[in-house]
Image (cartoon, rainbow, N blue to C red):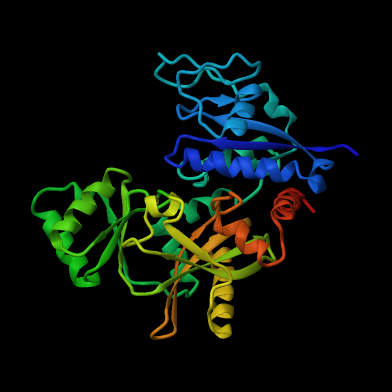
Length: 366
């Protein structure tokens, strides 16, 4: 039996580089599991923080150690992407020669240049199947403003929000105060200020006063030219995983609990700071509603393969609000997405196998 060569693409230039490495290590382990080892051969490709693509021994080393390579480290393995660091452009680079050997790609790059449609566009041009959403689904799933507009069009309930641009924030002294007046009138306090195109809660702040709002807007504008401000809500944070293409399935519901003020980067990635409760203790009707909304959200952004959809459940009023969709969620063995499927009867190795098969199915012209 000829093995399918899986191009495991990880690392990347975003702030979630280390998260990507951890996800890739878990996927590589699953592909090497007994039920998958006879079907798949792993071809790892590592993108350093400076954007350099490495194949051969370098990505193997990163997968083995779990530590990123320094930008100054050079790899002499044949076929690694190389470029002149003194050059003003990257017009003189070429992809690793091993790229041509890949039968199906498994990109597990989190954040900008990983789940925003850019790498998906490159893989589409390669005309090789890849796991996950295409350009449109990835881009809409990454940009919180475009995402919210798609959810609104689909009739999915959301908390009140206001879209803001960097130009409005970094404007003259007359415009900025008016912007803050509008936000206060529309949303009140507390509110959350978020860059539109970052993941893992990077750049997000909870604000309770005019002074905090101004500082948070300025900080978020340093990360992205598009921002979103959302009204705060007292609610339970629950999540649902989706698996499939045109006929997707929804998992059981999970809940996140934590002691910090909100689910920020430190809480998310510091062991012991947050607990995942699976399945969440919810009324059956609410659980079904969340699953239905997750599938609607998946279709609204034209997602494919996988996604995790996050919700707010206001227990006092029995209301459910959709928060966001993540089209390339964290994929370590302890991440919410694979855990939700494990509790739904799909163990990690089988989940990875099904995602690859979904990629092949979507790429097939028939």
